[in-house]
Length: 169
Length: 160
Image (cartoon, rainbow over all chains, first blue to last red; front, side, top):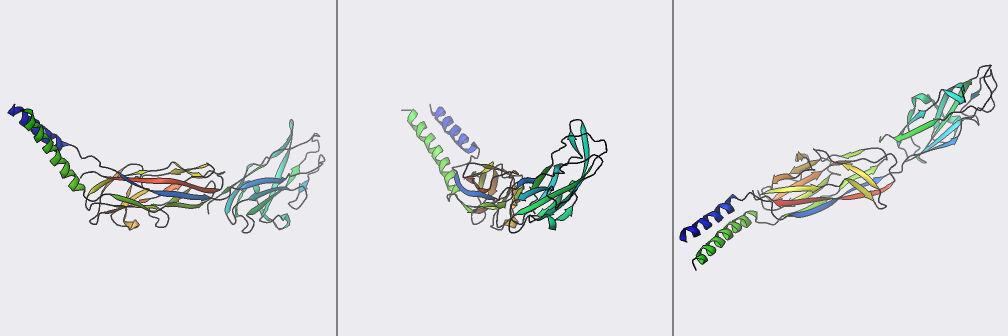
């Protein structure tokens, strides 16, 4: 009996001393993570690029200041820099199996005034600041059609798509 | 009757070991938040990163406890910020977005991965400071508004 008692005590001490270091009772604290998201960009197609009635063999041109000029409006955070590009700038207008070649001119202005627009190459896109007071950027498109003398009659059209994104600068 | 002496001695041994552990811990741990993690004003579609070394915007905690005693610190990191209308804005934390130091000098902190627990020995005055950076990733059509989330620091003595 005495031998058994000593063994139990020794075993208990060994177990207690050999116990791995365990993490004790925990305490916690918290902080917040915060952010304020600014206004997302909006891009609106204001008016189509419209050449109107076209005659075979006559190459019409629409100027940026013409009523038929294409017009996009971009609105976002005041004075924010944006990248503007055309994800779709078709080389032809299409009517069934027939097409007409088109070339483009572009201009931009922070005011809705194509007469004072700064020229740019639409296929290259542009990076500009939105207006500091209105948050606006206006993009205008003109162009010229190349219409052969034997061009088939019909309604020719294509879709132009403009993309805009904040740069973060 | 022969059982009684053995039982009494066993309890005494266990009590002695327990008492020894408590005296090593000493002072209770006291963690608290010093500063929120502030991403500030974000533009939709533009990733914004706060460095753990950013004194103005990095999240900050202070831990107080027994001097020169090791603690284990675990951060519970949110996967996203949430607006009052329930919209979410993803967050990302990388291996160097955590910082830990024995002083409040953020530039002197040692980098650690805040996604896993870290062990640190409290300073001679029983302090440790934890700093947190990270990245907010708003989508291009992220709705405007204020987004928040909670970061929790949990700390415990390791016994070392």
